[in-house]
Every structure is written in C-alpha cells, then in structure tokens.
Amino acid sequence: MSTLSPQATAGIPRSARELTFGQAIKEALAEEMRRDPHIFIIGEDVAEAGTVFKVLAGLVDEFGRERVIDSPISEAGITGLGVGAAMTGMRPVVDLMFGDFIALAMDQIVNQAAKVHYMSGGKLHVPMVIRTTLGATRRSAAQHSQSLYAWVAHVPGLKVVLPSTPADAKGLLKAAIRDENPVLFFEDKMMYQLKGNVPEGDYTIPLGVAEIKRPGSDITFVATSSMVHVALAAATQLDASGISAEVVDPRTLVPLDAEALVASVRRTGRAIVVDEGCERYGITAEIASIIADGAFDYLDAPVKRLGALNVPVPFSPTLEDETVPTPERLAAMARSLCGRT
Amino acid sequence: LCHTYRFRGHHVGDINRPYRSTDEEQSWINERDPIGTLARWLSQEGIADGADLERIEQRIRMEIDAGLRVALNAPYPDPREVTTDVYA
Image (tube, rainbow over all chains, first blue to last red; front, top):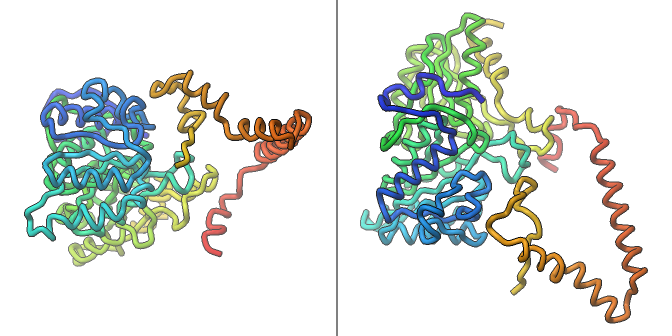
C-alpha cells in the first residue's frame, strides 16, 4: 500500500506527522473522549485487548473501563444499547469488529437507529457512531471479508463514511462523532498499517465533501476506501500510456458529494467507478447513474463500473485475488475506454 | 446455562493474552476440558479403560495428521474455480 499523495492532505495547513491509519483512528477517539465526557466506546475485546486489530490499544488505560467497555458477544445487544444511550444523551461509539457482523445488528441499525428521529418528529436524536471494517485480501474467508456498506447506504436516516487515508480517517471520525445522526464508519482492515501525514490537534472534515486525490484530464476514477489507492496506482500506470487519470474520493456515501463527482466527469468526459463491494447492485451503480445523469452531454464513453466479483470472498489466496479490483484491471479498462489497447 | 471457554487466542496471532491470566487458562485446560472430563467419567463408570482411551486418542491423531498432510501437499486451486459452488 502506498503512502499518502500530497493532494490527500491539501487544504489542511497544520503541523503534521506521520501516523498509521489505525493510529489516526485512535487519536481521533482519544481527542474526542477528552473533549466530551458523554462519549464512550463499547464492543467485543475493545478494552485490554485493544480490539483484534490493536487499533484501540491503550485507550482503556486513559479512560477506564467505564468508558471503554468490553461487551459480551452480542452485536444486536451492544448496538441496541448504543441506540438507547444515544437517545438519552450519551454519544456512543459502538465497535463491530468485522463489517460482516452488521448482519447481526441490522434490526437495531435499520429499524431503530435510522428511524427514531423521523418517527419521533425530530424529538429524539441518535448521535451514535458504529465503527466497523470492510475489505478482502486478508485471507479471512467469506464471513470476515465483505464490504457491505451498500446495505446501510440504502437506508434513509443513516450516514455512511469510507475514509481512505489516515488524515481523512481522523477528521471524518471526529465529524462523525459530533454528528447528531447514526453514522456507520467503515475502515478497511488492510489499511490499518497505511502511513500518511496527519495534522496534529483538532480538525474535522465535513461529511459530504469529496476530494480530488489526484488531478487528471482524460478520465475520472471515482474510488472509495482502499480502492482510492488502487485507482492512484492505476493512474500512475496510465501515465506511461499518455492517459491522464483523475482520482476522486467521495469520502462519504451518505451524504454524497454528487456535485464534485459530476464536475470532475464534465471535465474529463469519461468515468469508471471502482469499489470493493460486490459489483451487482452495489454503490457503483448508484454513483454511475448520478454521473450519467449529471454529465450526459459531456461523456465521450459510457460510464463504467468495477466492483468485486459476485461471489462469496474465497479463502484460498489464488481465488481471493481474483475477486477484488486491481490497478492492472482498472488501467486496462481505462485504456479500452480511452480507445488505447 | 452452558458455560464454555476458549482455551487459546482469538486467532493464531493472539499469542500474548493480557486480558486473562495463565492460571485461569491452565485451570480450564487441565480441569474443565470437556473431552478430558468425558474420558475421566468413562473410566470411573467402567465403560472404557486407559487402553481404550489411548487407542481412540491415537486413531484421532492419525486422522488429523493425515488430513493435515493432504491439505499441505494439495496445490492451490485454479483461479478459474473462483465462481464454482456459488449456486447449487
């Protein structure tokens, strides 16, 4: 995995140091918990174990077991507890170890958290963050590798965040914690060791603002989470073919910065939407539709999609590597779209 | 209510386990392993003697070793098999 491109932290004029993605997440949580005593963390193995990914290591030492709470293995239980706590004035950060496990908490997420504000006529709020993971190629097999954010992006009332860099992770997580709505925050577990410059101290990145991670003029790659790095690598490969690719990261799916995505494609005339969720009925379809609608008169080619293969994620490395978009496959698709083979 | 216990780490990389003591783990392994408990009960009831239990132990170990050898010696699957078995 590459380190941050200079564009990724543009517009944040602060002293920065290099942190991993996981360290940036922990820093955001620690700073927010110091700022607001209503914030607490609950999840499986979050305290002494610091989560299976070791992202929260040490937080229990500073904040104690009252605010970093090890829970029983019950995703529905802890998510429901979070909804209730949020409705009564707390600001819970619920840790669901693997994104696959949101399936166990879906009633609380979809029928409770997402609906409470609307059905109470705006009287009740659910300012809760659910931190969970996405992503394959960790050899974790079909039940620990899925990228399921399309499920929740479909449900009105929920916000969905997909950070791609350490700096974005910190600023977006702080914004998510301060948001008055339930926010699902998906971290690619393969990116926890990814390094990048992260500004010191307090800053937020508003939900609903895309960022151009790399400017280009011939084709736009709209890429999410770790696929931003796949798109950046593909763009570098395409330089040799004389194709200038722009990489745009929506950063949040809900709200979605449709204006920025459309504006990019109006400049470049071509677009590929690349994402690690299964391609079929995935978020690539929604984004491609928005681009086709908003940039129709500017398009030189059909809007294309590149998602994961429509299979359960296989355990065997030789099979798993076939399922996820790669820079090579994305670059080949881009050459074809630009009429170079 | 059925109380149970995970003898080892959450996964192969969970080697140091500061969240619980070695004594606690050892007491579960030595005193409360349900396989060991069953073996002791079978002996006490006179259903199986030490030789029977040793034979079962050896047979199971051979079966596991054989399975492990097959798995380690097997080639990786052909990438073209990736969509096999998604649907019946």
